[in-house]
Image 1 (tube, rainbow, N blue to C red):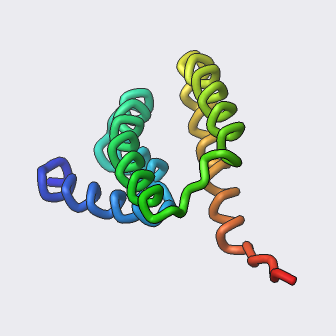
Image 2: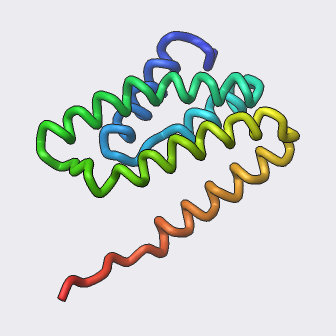
Length: 124
């Protein structure tokens, strides 16, 4: 029942909405694919990356058009993120699935705690 077109469309719309807000949704997509659909983790990660490319591209393009993105200060982070993603993608394929799940769960918990406890700094 949850594997049909309509549930997938609803999940896609929800995660697209989150991506448009800049929140992402990849962690939720991985949870949906693994916990609800019973997909193996490596396949879910690959699908998550494929989902992310068009949604992030469209969101970035729209943000760039509205002059919200300034690339110069982001360049070091972009280069560092790409290099780290390439290296850890190779390492991650060789890690035990239990280790990946625990690391991923820890990341979700830390991210959730940060969102709950975050207080914006007051500008002086």
